Image (cartoon, rainbow, N blue to C red):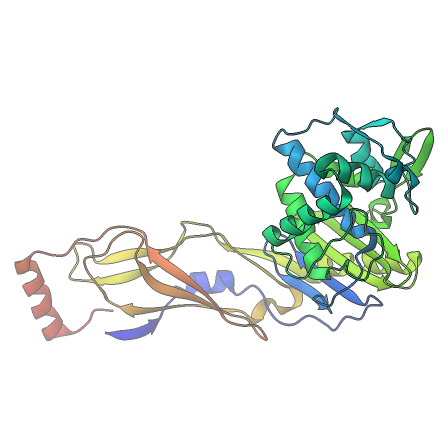
Length: 378
């Protein structure tokens, strides 16, 4: 038997669609990550694992905990939480809740997302966990479950504290989890205004006011950490997630966020190569009751690649041929290899799409004689 690289010419032509490095990109942001949510491909990264002050972007985690309780039925949007004096006295951006009043969950969601109310986050923390400290413990447990490896939450609002840290990558992980896990509640992040106690406030997220497909998530600012934004935008069937932090001004935050999202949509595209269960090629079978067997891919294969590098990708199948019978459906028989310039070669297993039985003794003898006389048929 010999190692063969085989893919029908028609398939090769169909899938030489893209690859290659993107042009260099500069940004004022100190910590940045931009990724495609469908494939998880990172389009741009700068200090994405560097510890940073999340400021009010950490409120996404506080809202995440509310969404969890709403989804599992532990809360309803019309339930209420009471306002403590601690919550009422909290400084910074406020929802302006009244002390000893009770506030509906839906109003608290809007008060946190739209108005960035520090007071509202304490109401939620105390309502869900009894205290802000206990709530912070819950936030950290959830962060671990989500795979946020470099985050530590000490409060519900993102109030500055040397030990309250996260990373751009972790915030992107949180944003993706929010969008995927709570499709019925994510729409609150796109709301532009909210009025509570007669006070109307606008959403601080600059990109939702621009015609770029943005629908979330949350801004943040501290003197030490600068201006930041966790954002997401969708165009057609593509969704990008951006986290950018350490910017010098609100204007820079708005400009850089829009520019990076535009760049990601413009310079990259998603290419669907194969659907789950699709036959990639056929393999010859040795001593089987069928002379060939389909090799199928188990999962959808979609690649996010630079638009300008379409001709750089090579698709090959590596396998030992012919494959001896018997063969069971689902057996791993080959490897689909996708070579992309300046990237690690992707290797995806291909499995048998059917069962193939072994020939009977006399049929095997005849096949063996034919092989001796004529060699392997091509």
